[in-house]
Image (cartoon, rainbow over all chains, first blue to last red; front, side):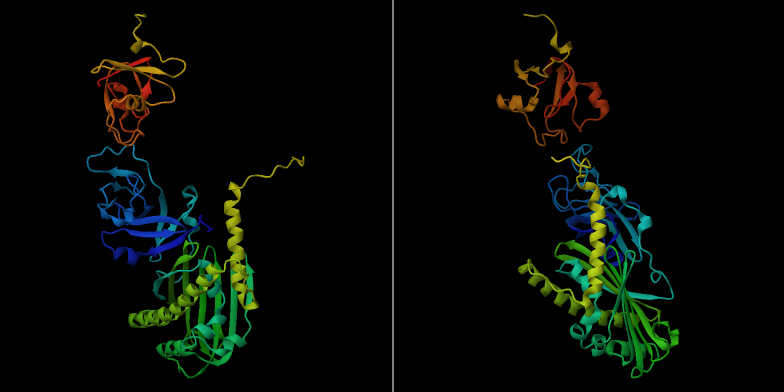
Length: 358
Length: 102
């Protein structure tokens, strides 16, 4: 069960563009979709199902803004209506579903639920995209695990000490308590460490930003969950005693870990991860270096989550522990459950209010 | 025997009508719950068909007399109004008798 009346990242524009005249087939919230550029050059999404014989349209190619089925050449339009097909009169062909799409921030966003409710004004806003003061680099992992396990992972950075021991992990994370709060639909979990040695990844970032990598630092992690499944994490280090998160830019190396987590099925998801930073935004080489480092770190999470999912799938009835370090994930899941209940509510049968026993 | 022209007479109240095949000289009754195509197929009349839902046009048949009740999505509204052809997989009759070029 997923919140479906919302915007999810479907793919990066770069990944779609790299396919040339091929469409992109992708399952999102159990909906099979084919993404392609229509006659006006705008990205469109239709059901990945040819109305003729059920072939996946994503196996075809894009011809003049129509998606041509790779089986018998039926040409599908951006609205889910067949445009033409060799030797056929197509006016009565049944339409397939078309999904609302928005191109923004370098991604294609899709609304997998009720299309009548698709609302561009509900798109999330991020200051660091399309902003010359910031640089962004990221990647995509296809993770064979429930998307909520990724939310749990990102809303609990205690795991860094163990999963990422050689890059961003350090014992001080364990030793510093974290604080969780809920503000409306947002969950904020934060941890501030004082006067510590920076771990390897942050030493690299300090060097890149002209700071002494061996200097003592104050380090912070501020994780923010917003529905349906976006997690933005303020992370960084500042020279000790300069104000931590609030230190002046010349005293710190600071960035935002960007996580767009898109459910594919109940036990798999598309994970668009990245990092937005304000230091040296024009340094493309640094962007690549950070992307490589982050990709390696997040691969460690992926390995853990996939084996965790395999365990959970094998023992679906085993109850898991929720500890104090898990409160960020617990609160995030509560928000998802609440919004899901709200989305499903109109479909539920209404309870008779008569009070007369049946 | 009535001399009334059934191709000009409205459909019977029970929704049934008769189909006369002009080339073969055969007549069949089409009950309300069966299609023309089904009645002809069951009688061994070989008529081409494919989708059986008024989309593909495979069963397009010329109408000699009577007035079809068009239910297909294949013909344009202009073609339907001409009443000289029909899809026998789903379309029915407005008159008690249809004469088809079969």
